[in-house]
Length: 416
Ligand code: CA
Image (cartoon, rainbow, N blue to C red; front, side, top):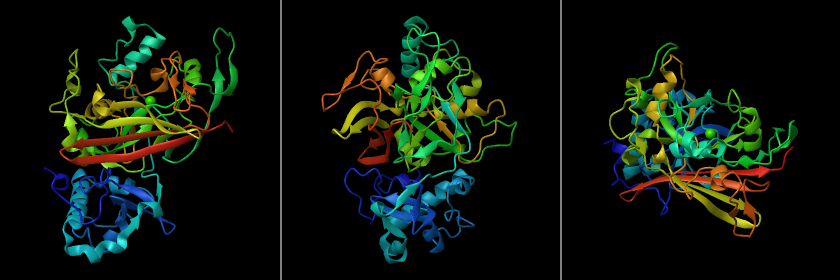
């Protein structure tokens, strides 16, 4: 067992009941503290300045320089998995053993006193399409149930290269995108604000430094190159998407914004929540074959909030519903020699469960707008309105340990 994952550990820092951030989590983020961006972790509602911890000698013998006195975590991510693990174990040790209380408290801030920032400078961003139920639902709507899954889907973790410049942090408002749409039965497109604005409930993993161009990361090596995960809302303009996506896939329908949660929860912290995925049939090609349980049981929730009603849950899904796991995604991504780098972000694709309360997009929840969802104020939603805030939450829970991601929260403003 990884030392920091021991469910019996108890921190001397107060952790509120049902907090996403007990001593067993130790996530990584970037915060603005005294007008300076530094790397931080969090226990309960206490934010710990890791740069200060370094200067106090906490990582002596583990880190050769202060990788935490940086605007992004990328340089820390260039280290090896064994280094990430040693740092997390050390933090766990310091805040479990109360011999050091006075030595380290000068690195503390309250969560309400700091502004969280983008944790990494995202180099490249890839979006997969790895939930079978989601691919099936979309296939049913746009083709037919018999041909819902395209012939490649059960053989390839399908994905596309997205845009990293518009990946934004939770709390950043977005403007409704504008673009071309082809109205029903029209022969020519029109231009205007998107009418069918949607969220996509996803998780994303963030990579360490990969191998040189031309080399591949095997499925057994994949976990050594995955630092951790965040919640990922892949905003989507369905009407723009429908008109533009043939033949090269999504473009302006997706690249206006994707929102992430602020805390990267390490893959190490998620290890106790591993579970089996769906049996893959037909058998996958050898480079995609894996051993052990590679899915993760992460409870997911989507809420909509507006001026007229408080946060209202519209979906409850789970990351364990993924057909293709992260190891397969990364092995596939690099099998052709594609190089990946520290701070790359790879999103799962919309995660939908088997029943309609677990669908990960409004497209599916309202079944293309044919089944509007009733909100607490009596209004209906087929898609997302101006003024709505979409909130996504994620947490794992087992044997009295709850490891959470916090939330990703985004308000939609009318078009600019
Ligand atoms: Ca997506």
